Image (cartoon, rainbow, N blue to C red; front, side, top):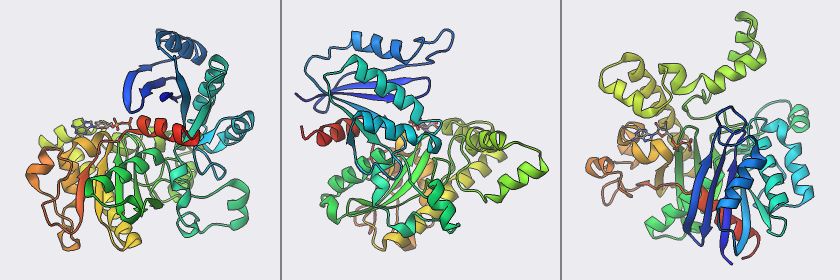
Length: 369
Ligand code: ADP
């Protein structure tokens, strides 16, 4: 029995994939749940409909993507009532993300009571980051009481892509050091030493680090106090602004990197500057993680922008030749698996991420299937 159903439940959507081994038997997206004209009235109806449609015979597991695992979940975990309660307790740390996953878990357990279910956490891969990469220099009592620390996200992607990179290099993952750059709508960087994550750019929430589609990435936190005092904005309004009206959208009015790049080509100065802000931030993190790792074997780009934008990859790594980082223009244009020239000290890769497959594999690992 190798069939696994992977569910990625958001607040108003359900993404699913049914795997047999690594073969995809079915996949799809139920959207705008609960909205008028949406695909389903609620998660219950959405999951019921898709389970009716799918052939779930021989299903060995359901794997759920859960964004925040807090300090407690450092690995993929078989779901029990107690696990559900613990994920519920983490809602304050991920108010936008964990409730959707919890609804999915509840409904799927009800509809498939005989099938073991596994929670696969976006944060888990980052649990190996040493304390000095996790703690911020804030009041320790406050930090302990309120869980103020770096958790990191996109862990399934960083885990999968760093492992694949070792395969591409032909070296054991346990001996390979990789900087992974996951650049989608959300974006994060990670430093992986011998298969274990040692640094990442997202923090307590997925807001910090790289410039994203609509999220600001790193800012001076004083900006929040200033906006509250001087602009009279409430904390909710500021959060909304930084998470939904920041990033490339805030700088250019467009969150889609393709549109930004078209505007760069036509010489729009806002787009040119935004592209420079985006790629400079990437370069800063690459520099930081070269220093964290000391020896780097590969830098790997993944997700929508990372897999498809030669312009972003070239700009992000430009000027780093003295550090052993070079890009072959033709390979880069072709989105090739290896885009550095032969013999370059650091191999630059483009590895398509497979987060759902990683969740399916993790589910099997958690159940020892
Ligand atoms: P998500 O984070 O929602 O999973 P993706 O990983 O699919 O998103 O990434 C979406 C982003 O990828 C969008 O901003 C889109 O503009 C960008 N993208 C997709 N194709 C290209 C391309 N050819 N060039 C530049 N950006 C691209």
